[in-house]
Image (cartoon, rainbow over all chains, first blue to last red; front, side, top):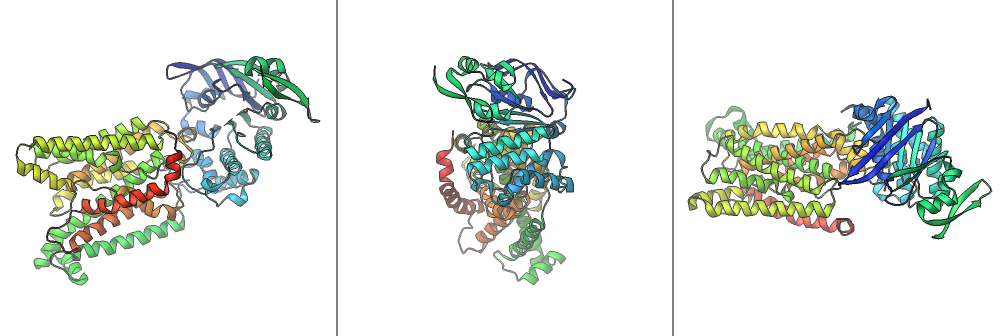
Length: 258
Length: 337
């Protein structure tokens, strides 16, 4: 467990008088791609926001030995990159300018992008394959293009921890694969990646580990084949699932409601 | 990160040159028209009747137009950056109206002389209440519908309060004086007015310029901005205080001048590639140019009674606002409350 970089210990989050996340403990490790799955309303987004330092939480979150709440905001921002749901861009800035926002935690108030910043932005743009989109306004891009720009912004930070909330939602199959592959590459390069994924087959194929959440609690933490067995899928999601052999391993497919 | 390109600096130069031209015209125009050369010489040596007119009457007026316009343009750009909404502007949220209500309370009931610090302070308190209320009501998601409705409610309430104050004014002459002052004008303002308001303007410029990085990060939404290290509570406080101090002081010396904060950022936004941080300075310069031009227009137009500059900006601003709503209609209709 020496590779643990972000750890939650008995984490609880209350929002509007309701406990959304309760008794959650786990650790994210370098080099590991982890999926967070669970039904709608299970508390996945709330958990991610707490881990990103956006929401206050009870219990303890440890970032590389230090308490997360004691880590200065900019240092936290350099270490934990957070991709919220929906790939929102409010202003029609260019895709390149949006990706450059990922370097915000590294820059001073007025400084230009340093050559290291420029290199990180160019690298993220190349990794996400959005070179041809770089000068276009983000608000004019398609859903798949926006998803890749949003992801490139998170990659550009060069953070040790990446938290991605539904990075593949509303994407076509090709873009789902591209985005999952990019996240896995980030993990292979030594990052700790936690992604909320609704597609259980994608989670099984791309992730080293799966966290299963239900009603604010962490129900299981382990390898995909154990986490996403038909029995657990039935218990947590209320659907009947079968394992299907894709020729590249077995993945669960939901068939009908129970 | 918030670096400015050569194009940005070129834009600043063009806008500053435009301001210099407008300032010179503003010194020339009035009941006694002066040539550019006469106006400049009068400004420099201050000799004779021309010197008196230029230095005592037109210079304060011009400087007030420039500083108030800049404050309004900057306030609009800052609010738009904070709320991520191109329709945000101080007047739509009742800031000048609230400032007018509290300032007129002070004037109407003779609590303090018109040229004391009490009037701008009262105006600032009013603006602070309305903008603070708006940011509190609009909340985390800052949905367009909620924000605009909350602004409408606050503006209406401030209007009602002003009406109540006029209603209860101790004598009709004071009520008339306040009513005229409310229309927004730069007529007959002295250097004293400028000196009262200027410290507040400068403070508001500093406060609004501080969260440069936050405006840019907020294009990704509040959660992403916080995850990038932005202190959202501090950013909100800086913008609310900056807008309230600037607008409150502006209203206190010149009455209510609307829509400059909406129009100015819009005029320059495309030129800075919609960057919510890079738009600040051009929006301030454009605001100064707009108000200076409007104030030249009210003096140049042949009319028996001089039009109030606040009336002119509203006359131009409202159709502009409607056109923007029309252009944004798809977003507005699809916006989740």
